[in-house]
Amino acid sequence: MALNNNPSAYARQRRALVTEALTFLHGWGYEELEVPLLVPVEELRGTLDPLAEDEHFRFVGPRGRLYLLRGDLTPVVARQIALRRPALGQVHRVSYANRIARLQRGLWADQAEAFELGIELIGPVGARADLEVICLALELAGRLRVPEVELHVGDVRLAQHWLHHVPSEQRGCVRAAIARRDVDALLEVGRALGWSTERRRAFSYLAHPLPEAPQLSALAEPLERTGQEIAAELRSLLSTLEELGFGERVRLDLSVLDDRGYYTGVRFRLLSSPMGEILGAGGRYDELLQRFGADVPAVGFSMRVDRLVSLLASTDPGGGDDCSGVAALTELADALTRSRAGEAVRLAYPAGALDPEGR
Amino acid sequence: MTLPALRIALPKGRLTKQTLDALRRADVLDISEESFGRRLVVPCTPNPSVLHRPVEFLLLKNQDVPTYVEHGVAELGVCGSDVLEEARAEVFRPHTFPFGRCRIALAGRRDVDPAGLAQAEVVRIATKYPEITRRTLGARGWQLQILPLGGSVELAATLGLADAIVDLVETGTTLRENHLEIIEVLDTTRVHLIANRALCRRDAQDLMRLLRALGAEITTEET
Image 1 (cartoon, rainbow over the protein chains, first blue to last red):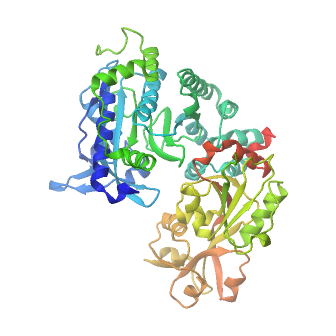
Image 2: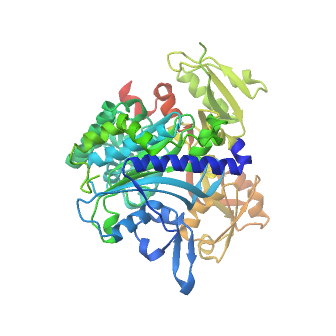
Image 3: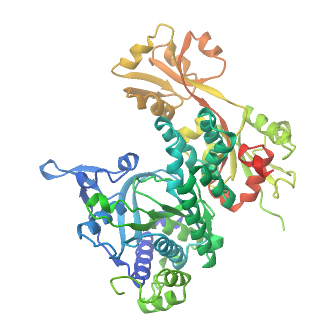
């Protein structure tokens, strides 16, 4: 790919893309936040899944203090907002775009650095806020001209409920099997636990490659009332997205797991259809700010800018050098008024109730 | 309009024959390994009630199958779980074939004390499977010095290059003939139908029909 041999073209493209994205998000009331590069380890302790924490780089600073290099932006942003002591009901819309350092498996090799941009919607609880963030993720992908994007959405609580019925020493294998869509491995676990055929099959739907409404119902059914409620919320979210015209690009995904250690509800991934590469992800994390002393719910998403730039360069090799696509804020505001995400948020926050900050 | 072929990556060798037999029994397609000759890309017409697109088999080295599928050059593939773990490939495994199960075992000379290995300051393990060795023995807290080898791993233990080996064991004959024995079975490898993550979205119905034909348990209620 041409960009690999042309670092300055890559840098120009990335800057153009980030500027366009942040301008778009600003039009939605998301204010850019500067995220610190180093955070003392003890301040983030317990906020990340141990495996996720292992991907981070740690440094010993002056006077022997241990620091974590910026690797997962969500907990760092949550900490910054929590330190402002937000009141319940107050809404914070923040955006960010930063280089991160985290050891991740890439398609070609292990990757230590990446560039992420994202948003966090802190304060509102429930489906309406989830809808705003999901619509924004899809609209932003469209705004950045990302071709053939799909959004896969599920709820981490479904897998969590099932995992409670699995002995703790087997949970790691079960999580791996779900991630690999290894249906037979889940059936085998169910068999070893002496579950009925029906229960085993329901359990294996966590790894179903193409789940639809019947699989969602079957998966939730043995979980009794909580499971039914989660399934109903998911159905409602999917049908609203369908009504908003996103139906073709949205798919149910029962395999979503809390792989970061703080997700508590809806979880989604943004994928490029041709390659199946994950371009972004997000979800609800209602208990993360609590760990920093502020009991406020939140939902957000982030996108991998480096992957977006590569994808855009491969689909439109000549388009990268043109920075004229950075539209003026007023033009964006007009476009937003007409956009489907605009409809979504108008639905979510009727006139006069947009948010307590009076935007 | 001719639809683009569905590319299936097959590992050269015994698994090719076993896979083609399974596909024939499932009435997906009828082609024999002998007709492949020395070709590396073999086109084939499947049963149209299962797959709506022509099929193209890619004949690859075992270890390369996950790479072709992960990068989307082949949409599907057939691969052992041992190879998948070593490649750390991010592909889906929607079906497990009933053939090709094999034990992956820790083995050593007959005079090796298993308890001694666990307590040793450093254990030298020769293997073709460093990832699996790390995941199984490393997770127990063993201090490992892994010696990656390409083949004839038994020799490393026999000649003292390593304290023990981690290798695939089918019947155990090779171990016996080289004066080694199984210390512990660490895992069982399986042969999977693997899929590129995008295929599960783009050609979802083709995949589901294929899984149904292969008798995948997840599809049994839908038949």
